[in-house]
Image (cartoon, rainbow, N blue to C red; front, side, top):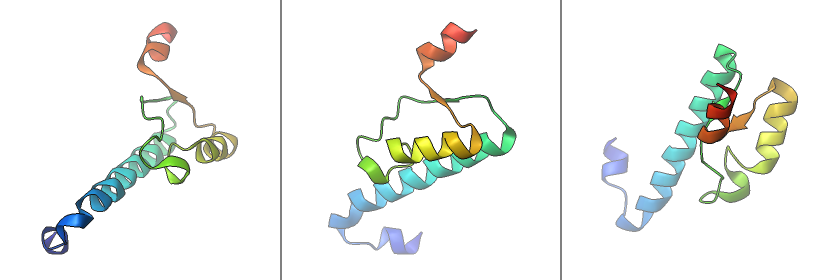
Length: 80
């Protein structure tokens, strides 16, 4: 935390994006580990682009290897 607090002001956005991607990765890993049927989010990887956890290539890999599926809230509601 001290390194983050002492980071240059112009690195703030980079740090925030890195933390957000780390949180997304943890959430996806937890979902897969728990055997959840779906992951509910509106995240479309607009901020981090193709490197994002929710980038199209990563989602295709996660679906192929783990059956991981992303659904928007309204899609989840329609399943209920």
